[in-house]
Amino acid sequence: AQSVTQPDIHITVSEGASLELRCNYSYGATPYLFWYVQSPGQGLQLLLKYFSGDTLVQGIKGFEAEFKRSQSSFNLRKPSVHWSDAAEYFCAVEGSGGGADGLTFGKGTHLIIQP
Amino acid sequence: DTGVSQDPRHKITKRGQNVTFRCDPISEHNRLYWYRQTLGQGPEFLTYFQNEAQLEKSRLLSDRFSAERPKGSFSTLEIQRTEQGDSAMYLCASSPLAGGYNEQFFGPGTRLTVL
Image (cartoon, rainbow over all chains, first blue to last red; front, side, top):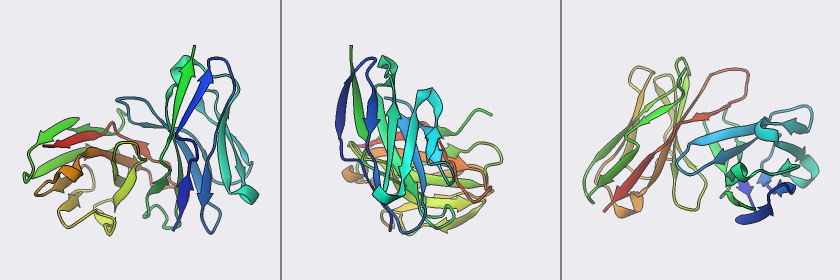
């Protein structure tokens, strides 16, 4: 069974600073990987996804992520954060059931932006 | 296209009562998922429909939980004899059946409080 680990429960970053959120996954084959963001009272919004091909993927809101098979990682990055980026971020992996397994999520990283 | 909608957004009930939640997916999305999210955790996959067929239900938390999608459009999730431990956010997601990958679009969720 697949699993996702987000080692950082909370991260505090100053506005304008760069950001990296860590995600490690466990899965036996090439995974489908996702990053979602959840703001208070909002549903989950997809930031970006990796299925195959170029290991550096671009997403919405200026986010990018890099798939590193050797490290089983899919870290999310942003060069300069904005106060509106404060939210909960979830990394997720899809299993091999063609969708029938649903997504497996990490526990999330709470991002705090300091002025 | 108005996205995935869920009703109600909030539900407060007393222990032992039955509750039912509704999810309306994006039009023509064949796949529909239910997840549960407890405080401080990522969403946990519960069940999956492809059209009206429930293809995965072994992850439903107990036999008190059941889901239907009778005409392949909207879906309902019912919890019978609710317990305080059922208090959580219940999320619905839908996706098209396409291309070997599975981008899920999430609704805003129904927050259940069991007193």
